[in-house]
Length: 269
Image 1 (cartoon, helix red, strand yellow):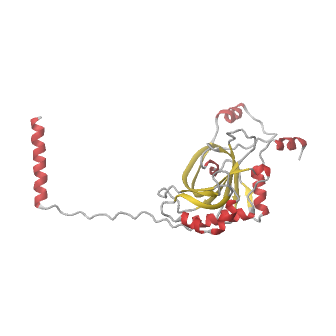
Image 2 (cartoon, helix red, strand yellow):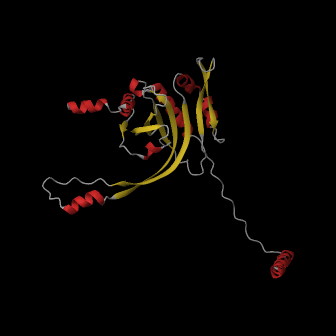
Image 3 (cartoon, rainbow, N blue to C red):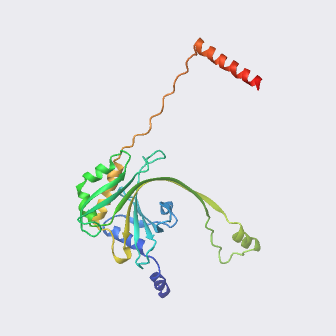
């Protein structure tokens, strides 16, 4: 690495690389994905800026999005969201908008130590909250960590991106038409992807200060993902078609009388 590259590295955000290295130390097959993935746009850019996706080849959690939070109070300390994606084909357009969060219980409001933890939110009768509250193995590690939020996410992404151009060979002769085409006639290709996933978010993590989820915490996140994948969603039943029936003589006479009254009112006006 040259000296100029080292100087540039001082100003780069290495949080995603540090998170990926920590996962590899746990024995997880993780690698950095290309920038510009659709998963980076989940939840928008109102809370922060995505630093990229980390792909995971095995386990219920298949990708991690590292998001730099906006420093609203100017604390000069970079804090991050870690968003873990748990793909689930059951999540569709008719799936309820599930939102659940962990709520710590303190011995004294605001300033007391955390003595218990429970889950709150709306699971639309899917039984997720009861599953999480009954799993006592999650309480102790999460009590000593940051708050966790869970939501179901479903969206169809579609956009057009500029095609990467091939570099011209050194000996190739570049004409004026080639320069005009390169400057004004840009080629685009369509990118589309359907994302149906659970998103487990952990906020206010100082990755650059060495505050990275431990192996014990990561196993808790995987345990939460397994609970989410075990949820059974009952699809809406199709309404059976009602076979047509023949009208009775009385119903036909009523229809004719109503039509005759309407005709007379129309003649009057």
